[in-house]
Length: 543
Image 1: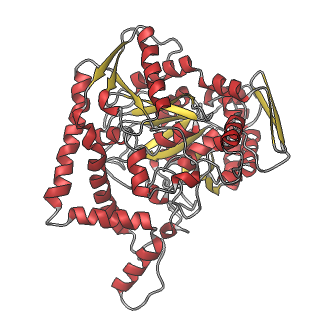
Image 2: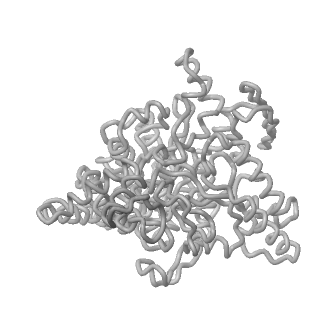
Image 3: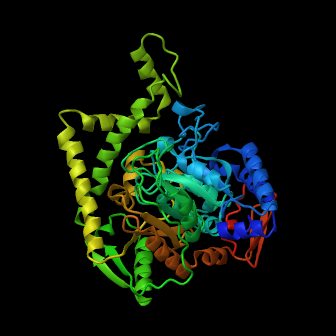
């Protein structure tokens, strides 16, 4: 891939250094070469080449639609895409062809973006590993990095290289892997409790969850209506700001979107943090937090303080109740949303003719996996008449207290919060599946779901590498509708950590793995393909 981000690629297209079709073909080729990652459910090759050809004409006429014109993108497979199968990685929707585009998809198309395909996920976005969809688990591109392989081999000399691959996190793991592997510049995910930020952190990229109501949910197949937000996954913070400028704003099709006009913004290159107040929530020092994340968190706080920012410890006392509260509210809304999948109007229908009720039952038994059925059962239990006040209503009250924690902290003068994104680095797949989906989700969402319940924006930024050579991310949480301030801080931090140079330095100048070699000179990564078992892992970090 050319360049390190959207703006660099857009500049190359404008200067005629390559055409949108050439860029599209490079992406399609790389998607095929990295198919073992299982990042894509559907590759829209025909549509991509058609969109790229149209972009060619616009560039020839000197009339590009915008900075995203001709730029390869990917969309999580729970966003509706007109005339393209949208499955939510579930048998229930296998073969379903939406008649319309989700608003966010249409807005990207209106800017000339080129769709490479629909990405893999946990079934109906219920999970934190991208391991529970019907199309199989997604592999983390960092599983094939030189430093991880070497350190893994040293720690487990008898280990099987083909079975010790890492999870991406979830549920937007396919989108995160597609950006991390360099097959596209931008990917959309959904974020209900951290489903964009979690995989972004594990895959070493930027993941943004905007303020609830800033970006339209129309066409996003719902999981939890009151928390779902379209998420943005990119290689750098500037790209996230660019994409947000395209997606944000009122949508008549979504009554929860803001009424005010959204003004796109460009992040400054020089950012002053001396007037910034950064809060460190003491309750986020959670059980299970790895020593590496803790050290990185502390180092980041020191970095901000040394740059002149005011760093203060803050208390958010209701955080300890958040994951339980989230589970109750999430499953209750899941039970309601999943009721629409009955086999009558669209999606899977069981071949049962005994009665309508028998057909309903068989359809849902066959169409949903154990995870989805389990959440439906839990949600219906919480919504029973005798349980409604005891569980659902009480959880709503606790949610208000959690939201108030954020309000009180920001009113005290804090501008942004700095927290971990995950407990540690990406887990090997065989280790991850030892725990059930509910347990893993509770562990992985502990730092991220509070922002969804409060409706505030949050972004995860790569901050360093673990002792295993895997990416670690930190999260900034901002005030509602203050994305410009949030992303400015995130960009400042991104520039200080210089993660891209760190990753390239770790990988060395010449890499040899099995039958694969590639050379890195002045940030130009050239691959010589001799095996399908490789990953173009650092193409996105070319500088």
